[in-house]
Image (tube, rainbow, N blue to C red; front, side, top):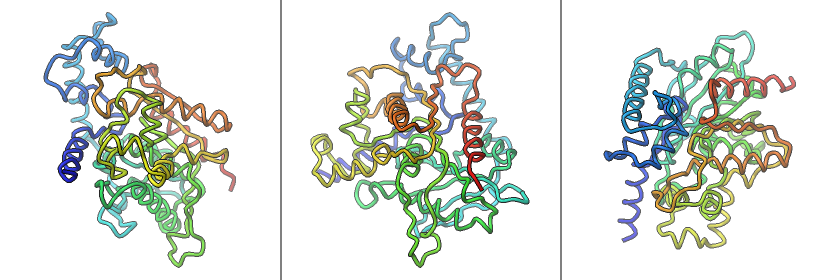
Length: 369
């Protein structure tokens, strides 16, 4: 019976994998899941999230406008895929023993060591790809004299691969990149990490966690630091504790199937009534529990509607709720750590991706040689 439940949960998670790049954040993903006409409540949510879809500017979004906007976004994405996507200088470089322990590196020609931005993809910890990195971010970073890396990590399976294995994979990748500082002309003091969804959670975990370097190791990579100077997130979760998510977000966000898989849980009863050992794992896997006043600044972007989740929400819906960002902002403000919270519904003509890049550049500039 447990095997059947695990299989069903895995299939369900695969259907709920969320896109994680800024340019992929569109209503196509929301409406494609259902053939029926969106409800009035759903249309209202989509309007808040994608105001540009209201083509006649009457303040009301209808099903036809959603279809037209979805088609427009799909066309734009298609052209983007066919465009000049960046080609890695070094592709599929192994940083560990597993087949998914690989990364791509986009190197900048420079006489001086360059800063580095590392991208960690999302996908509910069961999917996603390093090639989902926004090519515009790569291009703009490279034009600013910043090298970029994008990496894979192991997917959880509810059995052998659980939390915090994905986090430790990404820590290893960061250490590997630092070990290549001379060969790839990287400035190891000027590193930023960003990602969406699962990648956002890992980025914050790495940024807030104590340094995982082992100075006495015989392994050159393991001796490298895992600390960096700035974090960027899209739809990030500061906690993966289902009990705290239930209280923070409400609705059924805490029932996201990935929350079961990452800990090897099978039932709601087991998930909401953890053993002391499992609660310790909830704490270890949640970035916010590691937050201290010496941690790097954070730039956060959210796009889910800032509403109270309805009682009839789907399991896992609102897992990218803005309340995660507000919780992080409050905690970081109390510690006097610089942070920026941005919601796509209020961005107007702001380019949030460019703002995030500027945020990183400011952090790089503040580092003393």
